[in-house]
Amino acid sequence: MTETFLTVIAEATAKPGKEDELKRRLLELVEPTRKEEGCIRYDLHVNNAEPARFVFYETWKSLAMLDRHLQSPHLRAFIADSPELLAQPLHVEMYTQIA
Image 1 (spheres, helix red, strand yellow):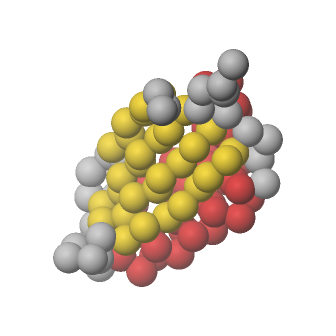
Image 2 (cartoon, one colour; image 1 turned 90 degrees about the vertical axis):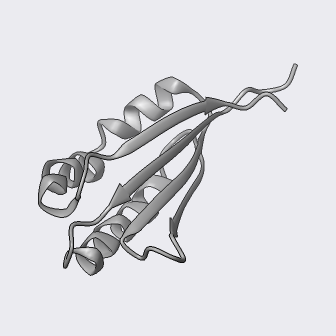
């Protein structure tokens, strides 16, 4: 039987003038998240045409492990500060890998 993984696409758009600060804060999430149990991939991208837009491409072993990530201190601190940085709420979509 093949393992089924959960893929998350999370998009963040900076408020005008907050692009560098948002980028710095998002980069701070990468290392601790990659060390979390169940994290297979946690990659940060910036939009080539709109440098205020960032996307995380994430792969998790399970929803339970993603839920633990969502409660991690580093992510909770970012979420608490996000209204100061984001032009709109985080846009998050979840997918289940089928092939």
